[in-house]
Amino acid sequence: MPLTAQQIDEQIIPFYQELAATGIPMDLGELTQSLAALQAESTLILSEIHKVIGFYPNPASNEHWAKAMEKLGITNVPKNTRGGPKTDEHTLRRYIDRYPLLEKLQTARKLKMSIATLQKLKGALEARILHSGRSTVHPTYYIGEEVSRVHSGGEANPMNWPKETRKLVSQFGYWVGEADYSSLELMVLAVLSGDTRLLEELKEGNHFEKVGATFFGVETLTYDQRQTAKVGVYASLYEGPPAVVSAAVNQARREDAKAKGLDPRRIERFSQRDAEEFQQKWRDRYPQAESFRQKLARATTFAVSYHGRKMPLDRGSEEYRIRLAINSPIQNTAADLAKQGFLNVHHSENLRSLGLKVFTTRHDSIAFLLPQKADRDLVEMYLKEEMEKVDPEFPLRVRVKFGPNWGSL
Image 1 (cartoon, rainbow, N blue to C red):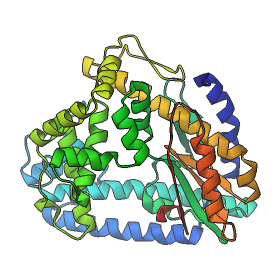
Image 2 (tube, one colour):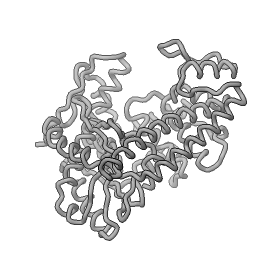
Image 3 (cartoon, rainbow, N blue to C red):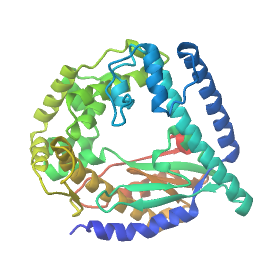
């Protein structure tokens, strides 16, 4: 019999209390340099925006977004609940190709948030070094009753740190490592639905290649085709409409183009018709998984996970209810499986004897410090063993990475 959701939460709470007390190691000097670099980048971008619209905007101000759009002649943007323009990622994707300045304003907003995060971390780190000599920041962890995911807050929130912030996590004489579950939510769908084709592909580690080959009609995928398949699968998994799928793929293509120094406006666009065809082929390829998803969608009172966690469905629109009915059992089951794997690592005498020290978890992964003299191959073997043996019903797969800092992974 699997553990109940309540039993899992009761067992995991002491683990997170220990993590909160231990904290996450962070280098104050590196943090200070990163903060200065972000502030310089923000100043430059705001100056470029000022040259076009005639004022220095506060990128977090809805009023300033409205004023900037008016200066650019953009009049047809949907309104938010306060009467101002919608400026979420999904809405802005429709306009960025024609109005590149909006992307600069969006970047400035992200920089402002990153700067605020680093300023908060810097203050917490300076205070702790002054009072205890410890170069650590300390999150507060909590678990919702209906949603199994672990959340964090307090002076640090590692769940939402971007790669640039994670690069600041390091400790002299140690590797930073991360062990994460591969395609965990898809594995949950495969097992609960009994879809043997999906299950075998996930075991072999070639699911996205198979999906991409089916959609594009080729045997060997390009990098872009594989990424399209991966983004398309996850955007479709929880009943995302074609517009959401096409927007997600196009955003991934833009980001990849920028990373390669190319013009993101010149990407080959993935249309809504492409998205509809992709979704239909994915569903036709895995009929048992699709039948299970439709069965979940028909729930009207509660969505119940494998471990008995209940999510009430008496809120929002019918479309929202359907998404929640499909999303909740799969995501909650995945999160509860991951938490049991984290506990196995925490209690492993083999890993403790090799010097492994867990400092946080993030979504489906566990992050740790490992002495550089330790046998990494042996550590990887033990991590896989502990995290993959959670439940015999689920043939879980774990990937392990090591690097000089958390962001390098």
